[in-house]
Length: 470
Image (cartoon, rainbow, N blue to C red; front, top):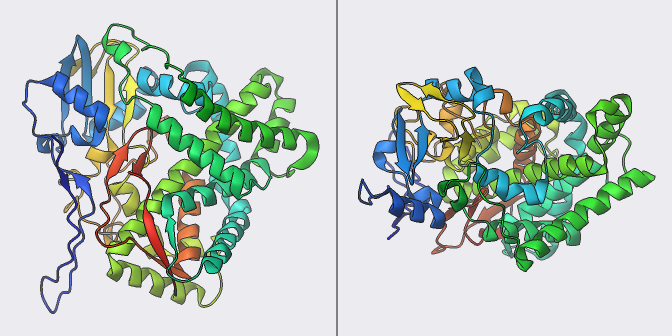
């Protein structure tokens, strides 16, 4: 039986030191029988966040064997560096579960590719979303956020919305305008959001075929509902790519850069299918992860008004009555810290799992070929020796000092670190600042917030909020 901690407590410890505390929703530690790994596997199929014991939240490397398969949990920064950097080539391959879950949607896109395909395309995609290009997209981020402000104003003070769907629509529009140079529109943005929500709900968290002896797992069972979800997403992405190739896109968009690069370097073999796969990967990864991060940030600020006050004061000090811009982002320390702490507590991809190509050794553990090597930011970021008061929302920890290398990896790390890191981080900070300058969002009293890990980490059912003009 799963139990949940949703302690939303705010306390003042002393009058002269008004330290307030907020412990956001998270599952309690796993308490099943130590030797029953099958029970743990079945629990993981229901809720991957609820299978971690308190003893897992230490700087350790542990291994278990399940149905003959070796599963290694790596939770030490030193060992994580070994896996993702030192021995990257042996551990670059995503797990059968992740590959099988996403190949139907993303093809051989960068997120799940490896080997020569990954080596060819990684520099290409990284160059397109490089941090030096981010300022060029700053106006898109700001103006799209302002359009959402206008729509919220029309809804009226106290209006109820689902923050997850609102943020997904916002980030989908930003990505569409940045990647394709096309307006997506509220209807099509909603179709992508609904399609991916449906897709996630239909994906099994465990590829049972892998544990039955298939090193690459078993292909996804494509039910009619799953096919409809994928077609809905592909239809939108294909349409905006076709519009772009027909000359109805922006000459400075990311897709245009891909097309030009292919023209200069035919050996890249970026045909229409490959172009769609990479565009779909950038689109889905870019909009989904930032949408989830912003949604969690609104939940946290709603329940920690003293942090919200600091954010509002900072925006006033830095921007005055002006709309925040991408040039203001480096000065928005509290906004940045809120996003970074949100990513610590609720990493969009809470499990970074790899499959060993060859035998290896991590710390004192011998690794067998085809074993699963699991790095779990959800656990790593809540390890007390790395982050004191790990379950508390304390953005100031990111203002006071930087985390230990390889202890904080919401965008992964090493050669496979997310190439869109700076784009997504800047987008989240800027969107938060623009919206927080004009609105407070409040989660209704009594609403139970429950994190759910499928392909990404979302609040179950989204996040209902009421909008309040400032």
